[in-house]
Every structure is written in structure tokens, then in C-alpha cells.
Amino acid sequence: MRNVPLHLVLAQVHHRRGPVVTVLGALMLGTGVMAFGVSTSLPDAAQWTVRQVVEPVEAPLATAAPTAPSTDFLVHQSETTRRDDSLQSLLRRLGVEDRDAQYFLARDATSRLLLAGPSGKLASVTRTPEGQLHGLTVRWVDGSQRVSRLVVQAQDGMYRSRLEQPVPRRLVRFGGLTLRSSFYAAADQAGIPDAIAAQVVEAFSGDIDFQRDLQRGARFSLVYEAFELEGETLFTGRLLGAEVRNGKDSHQAMWFQEPGQAGEFVSLDGTSQRRAFLASPLAFSRVTSSYGPRIHPVFGVQKDHKGTDYGAPAGTPVRTVADGVVTFAGQQGGYGNYVVIRHPDNAATAYAHLQRIAVRAGQRVQQGQNIGTVGSTGTATGPNLHFEYLVKGRRTNPTRIVEALGANTPVLAQLPSFQREANAMREQLVTAASVAWASVQ
Ligand SMILES: [Zn+2]
Image (tube, rainbow, N blue to C red; front, side):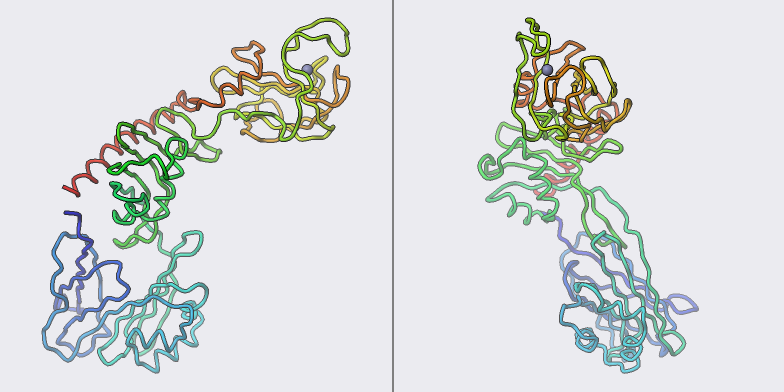
């Protein structure tokens, strides 16, 4: 049996002299409305503190509210704000019939946040059965996932409001799903948020066609971030890792981010889902002279051409075909303005005759970054980019890059930080699988 998403809510009511009464109720988490009563034998309930403790439990759906007969008890009720809500309509849904409260909420600047901005805020009240407001809490999460909480409390015969910005706790969640019809249907059924499911598709985009390749019974194990506040999940974050077992195939992917660089999904062997090398250092260009023997255009003698020439107007941006570190940026004889970039796996690329150089030696560059412009400095007949591909220091035919494009290159495998994270993720994926499959037994 799967875990029943049941949560037990424990409300403790304390008087100044100590606990007076404790009442238990049960409710389904995730429903928009919750209500339970807290019975007391003391008249001045406004002086009490009401604390809620939410703890996950496995339990059958218990009978709801307590039935202790009493005239003095508080009702706790929640509603989600709607786009067309007025203060009156929202308070009515919350069962608040309290002119003083309504007057305060309408005039207090902080309280006006209740209906300002986007709707969908969670508003909870504590009130008497007759509708007199004791406390109001409104919680919302903005676009940059910042949590705000407006708290209004009745105190000493008046209302006070304050705005809090609680920091949610980051948790790592494990999940799993088995494919029965479509991937998204399975994700839905397993309670995996859409935002996480979409990242799973992205993570395996290089390995799996989600429309065609997935077989019935394919199993996914997932490790992802969730952000909680007081026991409740507010939103999920990034998919950290995933494994799919699809027939005889299995793939593992994880999110990896080097300091100062954009993160990406990579397989656990360090293979990037993106290509290690761009096909060309110019976005639009034509090859005017290929690698190999030719009559040199300036010297008129047979010489091996150790690179590829791209014809392009002077000033055309030149981009590095792969991530790397600039090892040379400056003038060098016939090369004119010349840039050399070292890449992983003992590879390097070089760019000659540049009009302008936009990088300096020692600088880290990312694939596609502009490193200068096409020019005709050094020995050149006109504006062109002379491009070289070096493997272990030897000038190699750049068409080899194109040959390597089909296969993914393990670009990260050598990084110690990657090895550590990949090993940790392997263990987490084992945990995710055991957690996920234990719950379907
Ligand atoms: Zn050349």
C-alpha cells in the first residue's frame, strides 16, 4: 500500500497556568479547507496561545472533530484567496463575522497585503463559532520563491499585525514511479510534482524519447529538492538525480554545476547531455580553405595547411567551440592576433588573424562565448578566420571534431568534485529505489 497522505494535527491549548486541554483531530493535507474545534472551559480564550504541530503519520482516516460539548471553543479554518475576492467575500468564506476585525483589516497597511498581488494565498483564521476573529495568518510564496506570512492577532482588546519572512527548510526527497500509460500520468499518480517530472524528461533527453522509447513497467527513481515550512511542502526545487530502468536499458543522470558555470544534467559517467564541441567557431560562415596540402596563397609554395579557413566579413564575432581556459591571447607572427584555448581531454583550439581579441590569457571561457572578431592581421590575403584543432599539442584535422559530435564526450569525468558528487548520487539513487519500491509492495 502506498503511504496515505494523512497528517495528524495536534492542537495544544495552554493557559498561563499550564496546559488546560489537548484535542486531536485528523485531516487530509492538501485540501483547501480545514476546520476543527478546540474546546475549553475558560471564557477568555484570547489570552491563550494556540500552537499547531503537524507530524506525518500513517493512519486510517480517523473520525473528525472532537465532540466535547462546550459553548466556548475556537474554530480553525483555512481558505485560498481568489482573484475576485473582496475582504468581505473572503471573510465570509472563513466564517468571520466581525465588524471590528473587518474594519482593522481594511485600514491596516500591512493587512492590506492579504489581497494585494496575485491570488492563491493561504489564509487561515482562528475564530469563535459566532465568527469573532482571534487570529489570522496568510501565507504566500512569490515568484522568486520567497515566503511571506502576514500575522494578525487579537491582543488586549485590539488587533496587531506583522509581516514575517520565514525561511523554508530545504529537504532532499526520494520518489519513484512505474509507467502504466504515459509518463506524466504515472508521475501524477505517484505524487511527483509536474515541475520535477519536466526535469526528468530534460535529464534523459539525450537518452530517451519519452514518446516512443518508454515501455510499460519502466521504473523511475528520483532524488529532488523540496522546501518545507512547519512540516508542509511549499514548493519543490531541482531534480538532483534520476534513474530509469526501461526494459533492458537503464540510465542515470544527475544535476551538476561547476562553480561559476551554468549547471546541467549529466550522466553519472560524466557525459554531458550537450555536445562538447560546437561544429563551427562562426555562427554563419563558409569554409574557404580546408585542412591539408595546398599552395600557400601568400608564399605561393606547396605547404600543409594545418587548419581550416572560414571566410567572413571583418568584425564577425568568433566563438570558442568548447569550454576551456585561454592559454595565449596576443600577436604571434603570421597568425597575427591569435588566441589559443585549452579544453579537457588534452584538446585545444586556436583562432588566428583576429581583428580584435576579447579575452586574455588565463581566462576561463564557456562554449559559444565571444573571444574576438574576424580580421586579417598577420599573413592573410583578406578577412578570414584560420581555425586550428590540436590534440595533445599536434595540429589535427578539425573535421575530427565533427566526427566526435555524434558521440557524447565524457567532459567531466576527470573533475574530483564531479566524482564525489556522482558517487554520492549513486547511493542516493539506491535509497530512492528502495524507498519507492518498498511503498508499492
Ligand atoms: Zn589558414
